[in-house]
Length: 227
Image (cartoon, rainbow, N blue to C red; front, side, top):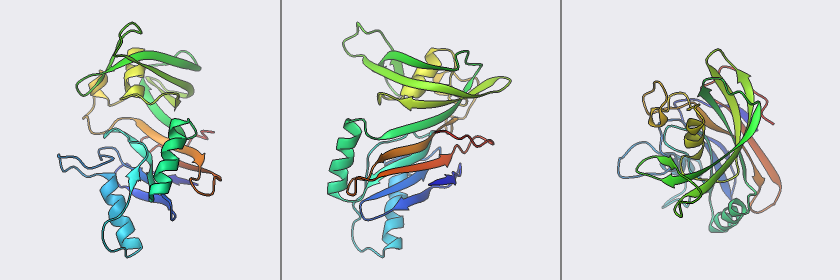
């Protein structure tokens, strides 16, 4: 399933009895917190209530989260059975998530693996060493899709799921994501960065059929065939 993501509007991409896939715009939270900012989970619950005229509380739990300035696809479980099975699939590495990012500068290697050891700092990830007992290994692979005059578009697949992993790792090699001033990008508002979860592939929690979803990265004018 393919569609174009909107940078400002959330959308429900897919919904059946067991799961829901929604697009999160940059600037939105994945789940509600005490800041009262707009969040995708509340939007999706309201959508379910209206779409199915459902009285009472809606069961909806996200399987993974995206940072507030990041856009992209998020998986929600609609039943406790789906939640258990999707969490099991996530732990087993059976949920593939691909990201597109535009980073500052020209990435010299056309593809590669980034490995760092990260600490969860106050609002940011801090690159440490493997000797630090509190540091967790962060691993991702990437390939270059487009080289521009002053930036590079890359596709990223996470091998681990650490806090701010993509943002911290590309900043650590001198290529912060465009707009990500928290990680030393040259400019940005802090509300939106050029990073989006564009692709999901995983087994349906009940039918076990492999399902695939794709959105175009909303910050890019060019569509990339990412698989």
